[in-house]
Image (cartoon, rainbow, N blue to C red):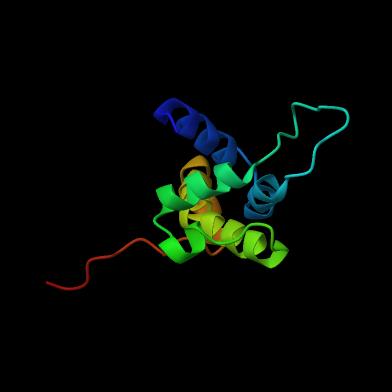
Length: 115
């Protein structure tokens, strides 16, 4: 696969608003009769490319994607390795520090004690 296509695929994954939406994106393999471009189709090859990029073990990269539970597990692993860390940083840097602290996503600032 070309690096440009892989980068495009990764960008599509990372633009999802939540981990659940990213998993839905990876699980969307049915042909859409309306050919809605807002809901792109993810192929077995796409999931495999993202799994390789995520560093998932070879056994799962090469799993039989005709088995629904394998596809679900592989999609979950890809989201855990690629999307969730990115999503955490995106959420952290887009909010004000006080907002993050109130949502319990940050620790209080360090304070110097004594001499």
